Image 1: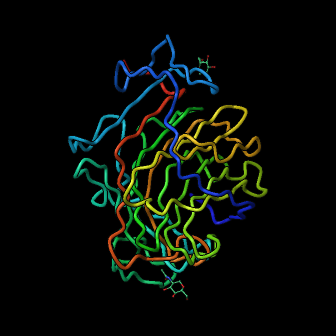
Image 2 (image 1 turned 45 degrees about the vertical axis):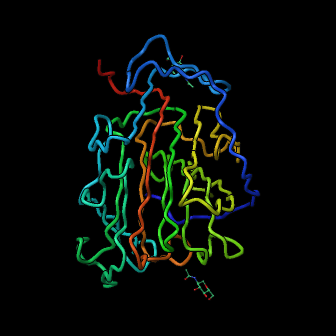
Length: 287
Ligand SMILES: *[C@@H]1O[C@H](CO)[C@@H](O)[C@H](O)[C@H]1NC(C)=O
Ligand SMILES: *[C@@H]1O[C@H](CO)[C@@H](O)[C@H](O)[C@H]1NC(C)=O
């Protein structure tokens, strides 16, 4: 997951003016599935399913989302100093946010080939859709990202390392994947054919941890488009996934100096206030 091939090919300047969505969105219901009338997203297409998750009432878990638990990732296979493990105890709702945490001050083992346990690894947090049949969509995540150096926070589509679309914020300005000593948001299609990923980055808003921003991926059979606060950042027509999978949100670290760096010295908490999803699914619709 989130493989280590990264070759940022460009740098776009960040626009500080948030442009609100002008779409006529059907807000008449929440978490409707299998609506044959469809939900039209201007310039993207029509989607059968719509889901809206909010956390103002600190409700967690919620129908349609789940926290990954005891899911270990052997990053050492890709040369990282540490492995990481997703624990559901690092995911909770409080203060009106879904909170996804990497606890600070962890001192995991760097020994190779250890079993991936909470003691041996960097513990991290991850949320996924329970629907693993998502095939095309427009997914908007409104969130605060932690600026505590040393994690990757993001929203992404995942089927496999060759079917993956990522928005990822790298919070350590010294990560060699960031540029000019500034943190950045990376927009990526992972390679569908064993070649190179398609990726670029945008310097992160200075207020990324204090002002909510909307991070959005539009995915069709033709292209992926990445938006920050409704402003188009990139469109890719190569390495576009074509197989159904899952949507995820996570916050993690493995010590890789060329990606996450970390582990963080203080608690790193990604705070999601809203997730809005228009999507098609190959899963049997629940009524
Ligand atoms: C979503 O599925 C509907 C019903 O099959 C189809 O008409 C529509 O074109 C699909 N949307 C996209 C963006 O592929
Ligand atoms: C980044 O590198 C500079 C120069 O070595 C250092 O002063 C700073 O503390 C580093 N920042 C972090 C977050 O490690």
